[in-house]
Image (cartoon, rainbow, N blue to C red; front, side):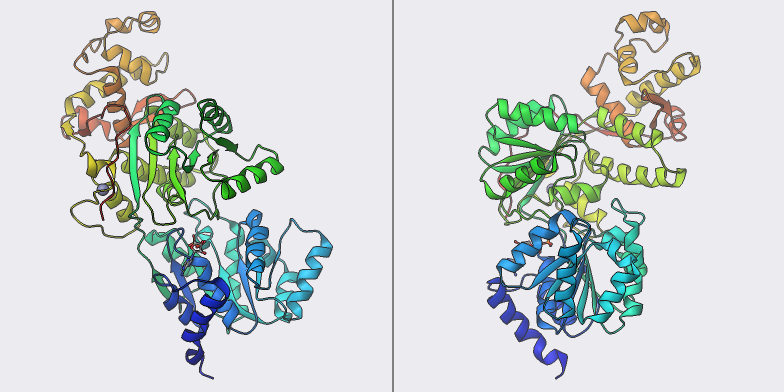
Length: 530
Ligand code: ADP
Ligand code: ZN
């Protein structure tokens, strides 16, 4: 039988019979037909688009077992349970199992009794695992979260590099690589490193029109969050991301104290507590999980109405994935973030004092810069986000992000920038002590604080030259200069220093357009367009 001959109809029949769905979505059908017919595929689809069916159905339609490589060990049990509930013969092999459990699954595989076998990537580094696979019949290899192969990405897993050998060892078995990360460079790296040169590429639109993107200046983040929840998301399920375990705990407590059903989730919690909170989130209505980024990979809850960030994500990829957990059901949802000067200082500091060589640091910094550009843009957030993923947005803005709903004003910040930079330059020249943003702003505002007097900073020519702006506005200027690379952070105390580009501003060779600081209140949302 020609493979094409049974591809289409049998795939659709499987969709109906096994999964109970009416129709394919987006590229699903094209991908499935191609893989069922034996072709390789690289699939870039946003979170929630339905990547799993793209390999599950070929695994069911083609003879043999579909081998799924996934780094999400913690979720394998759930995924396999969910498939078994549908009558799919699925199993997994990973480090959480004991010897007997593994033996049972291996025997099922060899006996041809499995439709799907989930494997952790490190398994495929073991010759014993490869040999086991050679003794069974494989219908398709699925490489999930394929961006983990990218050394430039935010989620690199060395074990993924070994996956290039699958194509050599099993040239007749189709391979499908899937990811929700879609930058051009990640796409290229996936194709090259997994040696998918003959693959067809399926790139879905990354737009999530039902998600409203909003980034607000950080003032009192917990309170701002509470206002958002009370005014717009009362009783809704949502995820709140914080950087540290400590702030996860505190935020969860704060929400609970204020009448919002909320639980914490981070890697420092007991595994049992974590599992309990995760399953409550999946099963209950309207629970809020406050979490570090340890939470969410592979979580499939359709009615998450908001994702809030109380701290700045480290990359646009991370931000997109995390916010992408909102609104999988297609209904209006909010991606909200509070962001301020300290976020920039902290992250720059972490990078500078962090581990890794200079090349690594620069890479991490590039990711951060793109994230900062998204925060500081006066243009449509969605447009900027899609542009980052190499996709074009309409020229008129989306109508469903904060900058489209309430366009921010910009102003010529050249003089303000010069004032900040020359203050930094004067303090730097003293070399006795290093100073951070607080001291700079106090000097500009002409405040005789203890620390200003201690260092005779009221004697500087720049003392009090910035009374035209408020403290919040000066912090905004410093933040934007940091974001634009016109200022840098050094050392463990977050000392501000000039950069190679600062001189252009001081020497009047460069203008500095800045975004006007909006009032630090939660913007009211309008209903999404369309
Ligand atoms: P991804 O891996 O791309 O994030 P999933 O494969 O987890 O997305 O699918 C997201 C949700 O959409 C799941 O609940 C899945 O069952 C559902 N889904 C996928 N394809 C379809 C379809 N064709 N019709 C209806 N629901 C679908
Ligand atoms: Zn917009």
